[in-house]
Length: 127
Image 1 (cartoon, rainbow, N blue to C red):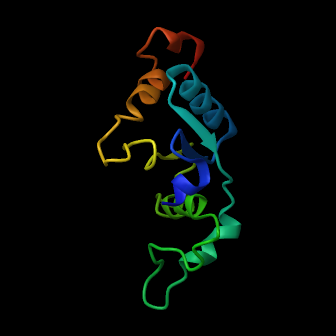
Image 2: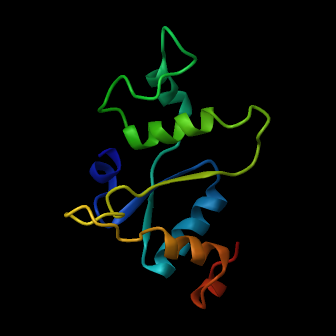
Image 3: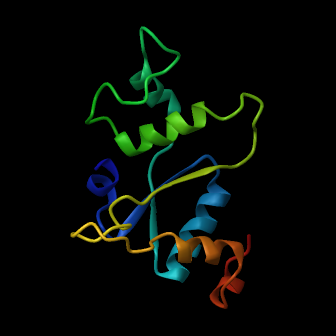
């Protein structure tokens, strides 16, 4: 639900810790026709949403109106190994990945193939 509210049915939400990788993903989305729209990545603003009195973190946000799609990426990042210093991206494609009658659209396959250089158009997108 949060991704659909943030970016609608035609764009997936993109949260990334690297401007370079984010630009590559947006370009791959444009080239493939599977559009990605960047959202803020500000874990310092969102990590308080996951406070729990019984666990290290809870897997839901306290305030459902506080950038849920960006919070989801912060949760994922918080669960990477503590010594991981590489690039990562979270593509939330819940709304564009299904039709109104809940059938799969296959959204995400073309943008991934484009990013990996598996299409003719991908020569314009350098990974």
